[in-house]
Image (tube, each protein chain N blue to C red):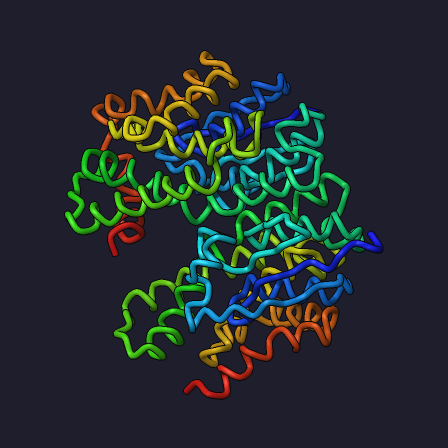
Length: 242
Length: 224
């Protein structure tokens, strides 16, 4: 019975699942997919995940979507070290609290920056109006502020002395704007120190490997075939600019 | 967990997430005290409340000094701390994963669209502020797509979203889908499968459902 994990490492939630599985030596069949090429809309992928997003897993006959659900499932199934998703009720609640909040906050604002600063102008050839850009930056800064003041505070990691799924999900999101050349860490020593700790805990090699697509995003965009992006250009523009 | 002190919850029943928490507490007979915090009076923005929750959002749970925000986290915490019937948040990993899948997906899909519709059709008119009919049309279309997924990916041929029994997923979803009723909009009216599901959920929750939704019914009366 093999575990298949469908991933495109350009996507933040795919990176968190990839890092989690690799870090915990979970054996899996790595199914590399390309979101830019629209694989998620294929009939084949529809059998895995009707929500047509990545990541997704297929464990025997059991298919599961949503990175948070996937990592909780893998943590349980493979009995990963407690600190990832503590059994202690209140610590676990703190992890869940972050995992819940981030959906409508950091996830949206951080990923938007990559679209606004890189993908839409360079791959789709459309400039973002100044007001929209300014608002997006403001939203991201507001989220990062809440992250530092409410979730991190003076602790080494979100839930305490050890890394958890909360830190993992946070780091992959906050790395997304870096792909557009926007280093959000340089403005905050606290955030930078936390990032360094998280990267060290994950292992620099694994962290950097998972983030290759982001680190080289500006280069990659130069070689992107605009024709391949045509099919979802209207959808993207409608979603971000309407 | 007999003998522990009642939990305190800060709620405004105009909020979908707050209703889900209240229904859960009542349905499971979990001892609790409600601190009504009126959003329309900006009570979640007072210095006192901000100290409790810097994000100035509701619901907030306080369990003997432990303060917790985010309805997902609160519901999962209560389900475990109070040993409620397993169907709410099953212990079996594959069953639990289905509930986690829904609670994650709910944020950017149901909640986002539903909150926008509420803003455009109830809040902004109430405050005498201009609305955005173009964007509302687009969001209603997005919601339609989301409801397709709710029906085809989650519900399928099951009685409830994650299986044969009601779970946290149904609770969160039904509270979201009741929100547009405030502006007399039944987003499920052309969807017999989802209408039947909603009926089942309401039946399962009976009194606690209606109690929690009294504010929605009131706003609906006044609206239009």
